[in-house]
Length: 257
Image (tube, rainbow, N blue to C red; front, side):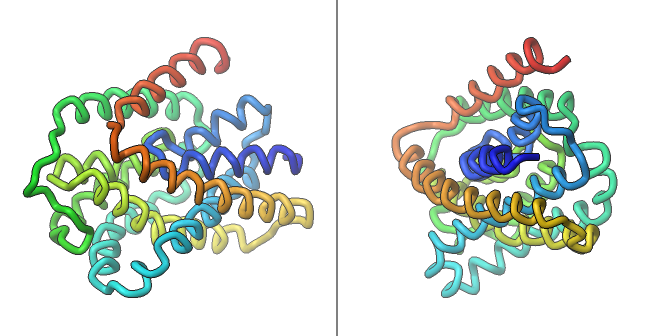
């Protein structure tokens, strides 16, 4: 991996982490385009640079995250299913799922179809949950169960959380913000577990690539968060569903050998 590759992947991560299009899936596909071999370091890189995007959430919602205990209670409740599944299946996820182009494309395709179907059926109503604090613990946990499916590359953590939150009767803005907040412990745990397993056994150039990836993803993720919050004021997630389907078909036809 060159430093240019690291920069490109950091931009992809920053753009896609909070959009319902799968950041992991896009990192896998862009790595394929750039002819980056899926080594153990590259797999770790794709996990660790997500910390930059998560730091963007902390910076953007610093006041909320440092002042509301109730938000953290709901977030940690939702985090539990992913924590358990991620820890138990770590070797399988990193060894067989991350970097698997076929699994990624199939997940992108199916997720795109589901996103469109849900949006066609979803109608925001006055009684829908309008703040993260008002989510029930049961619904928070169910959203977390849905998020655990995102260990499969291409599913999209944000898509899984947003779709499930909307299905459970949450207003669109609240669903998106809860997805943002839930990313914090989820990505911290994923990165921490990977660092623990690899024991930070990286070379100097690899550490530089990680630094580039971290800073790049942080800056781009800030812009991505602002874009999504503006987008949902007047638009649905259908364009993202269509995009997922199109990109999956194009890669399957022209890129994946």
